[in-house]
Image (cartoon, rainbow, N blue to C red):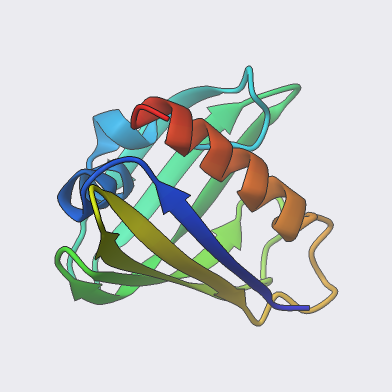
Length: 137
């Protein structure tokens, strides 16, 4: 099952890009639980660079991957893995488009398959609501 979400955010494209690519910003919104807390974010945002993000809600989670597409400030693509699910890799693509004073984010998470225990559609929607709050919505 692949995930595709179009989400509008109340901030310019550059601010949304920073939220995805600056560790101190990522720590403030990543993770699907409203009361979740970012613990660690290491981002080497360049093609071939890697990332690792840890956060805690009811338990600690760590995701990681490698950037495949970095077209600042419009397109970010990367592989997605969970430390808790070794050998299960999927692909994420984030496309940002300015609309008025805000940004439309077209988000896809492909090759999810059935090997992961995560409900990606619900998880990403909840996570993006946290991002919207962070950016002023």
